[in-house]
Amino acid sequence: MSGKKSRTKGHSYERAIANVFREAGYTDAKRQLEYQEGLGVDLANTGPYRVQCKRYKAYAPITKIEEVPEEVGTVPLLITKADNKPDMVCLSLNHFIELVKDRRKLVDIYTESRKDYKEDK
Image (cartoon, rainbow, N blue to C red; front, side):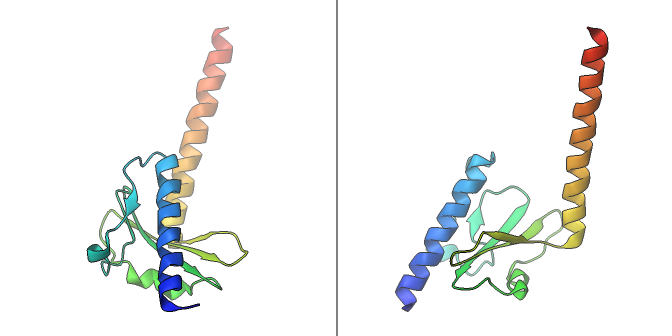
C-alpha cells in the first residue's frame, strides 16, 4: 500500500474509533488535528484514556503503546486493527484490573439495589 493510502487508512481508523468513544458517552471525542500529531495521542476528549490507534495489515506490535506518554491519572491505550480481524485493545494489567474492579462495584451496587427493590414490594 502506498504511503498516502496507508495514512488515509490510519486516519479513517482514528475517526472510526473516535465515533466509538462518542457512542460510549465521550460526546466530544475526535481525531487530533494534523498539526497536533506527534503527541503520541491520536484522539482528543476521551477522558482519562490516552489513545494511540494503529491500523495495519497485521496487528500493531504491543510496543506501540510506548508512544503514549504516561501521565498520572491517565490510562494509555493502544487500539489496533488488522485486515479482516477484530479490533484489539492493549493496556497495562494494572489499568485493566482497575476497570474490572470498577465494573464489579457497579454490578454489586446494581444487584443490591435490585434486592432492596424486590424486598420493598
